[in-house]
Length: 310
Picture 1: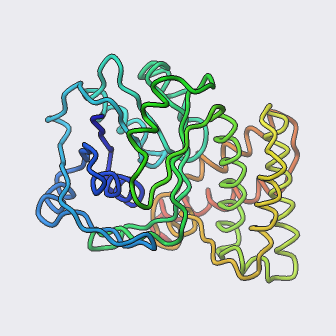
Picture 2 (picture 1 turned 135 degrees about the vertical axis):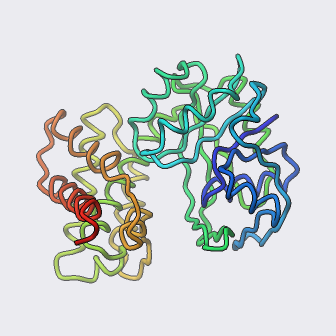
């Protein structure tokens, strides 16, 4: 299977590095500076599953041909339009496109622009960071890439994709019969974690150890789950039990990428995660003041950045 990965940042670099190391036919679509770095130095990954350093194949946008079987989109949600424009020349009649962006709104955009037959649903559960030298650091044992048909069921192409991705060290591909349910559960998890850590400017354990933090975290989680319930995707009991425990652990050092981006003065996906949560909550009749507070917090950060941090 011929695989194209858009970007070689933290997530794309980790997944593509693992697949390349396992002998899969992987090419990275990257900008000129990153391409020069990868062509000269290869890709490095440090991980509890073993470090790797390997040469990788790269391509620029003008070198694409429409013969890729599978395209993995690992961009930030705010870069979706440019990502779509970049990969269109690589899409053939049977190409599968798997977006693993945060949020939910990107699916309809991709369906409209590429055609729903090309677009899979998917999520990734991983904690990775790209270091200043371009190397990728894997920060815990999360390694799951989840995917499936938007319409549900296990199609022949999903089974074939699982076979192509399976067997790489440090990567666990999971084919879902109901990937949209998985995407909603990921949204409940992410919106809660991003909302609380960005609002409080602290990791999970630090928030939980405060006088009111643990109760506020649980309130945010339960209210976000209610949004999913009223949207037709109630989270499972196991999911809720796991995240009630995770978000009440006083020793947890879990930090979301949104908080890391805020601390580094970077762009964030506030609109795509917390804006979507707030608007959806209002549509389905969930009145949770914490949602508006968290959304206002990240929008204020964006306004401050727009004013030069002053």
